[in-house]
Length: 278
Image: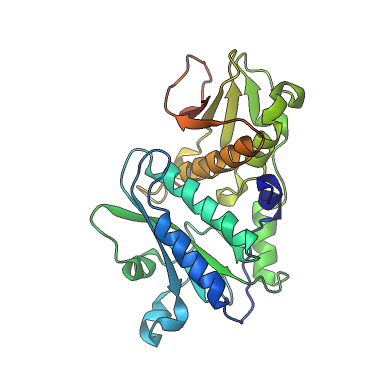
């Protein structure tokens, strides 16, 4: 399937049908979780499919998503060892898993600050220096018109995306036009459509004079650091990298993300990585 169409199809699902995910899909999810071990920057990751039906009642009571998620029986948990780019790596790989679940017809929802981290971490059996930055429920989408779901979507303005000209720029600081983006137009649109914590869309991409793209973070410091070592906006950067790369490659632009900071002056933005063609 076309990566951009999958990205357009994915939405945050907070209410799930009661019926269990079929065995074939579960087996495929478990296989994917086992295979995804290293992010583009080399961080060591672990993903686990957690089946709530296999947990005793006492442990089950401690697992909570603060009323945000209803009906989910399966969760994917993502753990990563502390490293410089561990949040970006987690965001990149977990989003790719989420998109694969979307292809299977399953719903998901990124959770970083709205779950009982300690209880889920216990189920994950965290190793030394591992963090549990995010989880996602996974299952068949149910009725999405609940009061809680509506309030959350309204609060974060879930359907709204910043206009193109506020996200993508030329080296001189002027907005990058869709015509100038050329074969990268769809890859940039895929970034624009990405999910982000409370829909803040902190990604910015700059095309330099040589046609190379550089990813920056427009950080909201207090918000990004409220969970300590878990930097939720850096997770968003990994999601942006995943979307950009998947679509860029499908459009014939082969390359990889590398850390080679360019000599560009963009005050208020933090450099993350550059997309360098092969």
